[in-house]
Image (cartoon, rainbow, N blue to C red; front, top):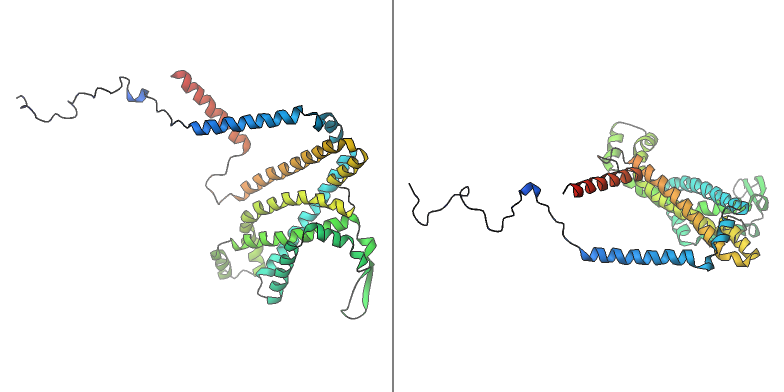
Amino acid sequence: MSEPPGAAVSLAEAPPPADTPSRPLAAQRVLPLRRPGRWIATAVVLVLAAQFVHGLVSNPFYQWDRFGYWFLRPTILDGLLITLEVAAYSAVLGLLGGILLALARLSRSPVLRAVSWTYVWALRSIPLIVVLLFLYNFSALYRTLSVGVPFGPAFFTFDESRLATDMAVAVIGLSLNEAAYAAEVVRGGILSVDQGQHEAASALGLPKGYQFRRIVFPQALRSITPNYVNQLIGLIKATSLVFYVSLLDLFGTAQTMGATYPGDIVPLLLVVTVWYLILTSVVSVIQFYVERYYARGATRTLPPTPLQKLRTGLTDLRDRIRREAAV
């Protein structure tokens, strides 16, 4: 029986629209949205980067031949070794001092809290160069140091001028300054631990020291590590100030050689710059793997390493080329 004129036609029997593509739906390609602004910005950045690199390489003022001459000279490497020693000692002592200050700041004793807050406030307010110069001239204020009964007899007496070597002044000054900043990093990490962890540990009857060592501090390290490693990078750069207390570190050696060879000042500064870039890059790589280690249990999947990212990128590029060739 035929349908009357004007009757509805089912979708199965309806003819396809005139603009329907002839190819099946599986063979059709979805074109991405074009973003001309992104390509223009990329082109501008690449042009500026190319001009910068070209000027860096072709400008004779940089004297890259002299840079190669100074880069691995024994005097430069000796200064680099002193920089590493000062940074290592200061980082360890500063972190230990920061932990003690953070615990004092979080204690129930008002005296400990007041002393810790005052120390952090004072050392973060005074420039590091002032602290170093003050310690360097400390013997003018106190020629001898003694240990004994307050306001009473002294049991031991030390000659301050013999103890305060250039290395000791540099390490003590940097450690005192670093402890003030590390205290805030550690305190923030401890406060980031969920309060339920403290309550659960207390409910089990665990001693306070055991709670801190085995429960609170390991969880706080997840927050402390990236912040303190960032502070460590600043410490490595701050070691350049020890030149002002007569310690010939990497920067001090370059300054001394620049005074002896005035024509090589720019190459020597480039040598110092490259070595600091290398040191901070190594610390950044260590920071990545330490953060990745402490991320276990906090994230479902660990962040990929640079090698894994490179391998994934090459695999995606190969698959894309194959898809383009197949079409």
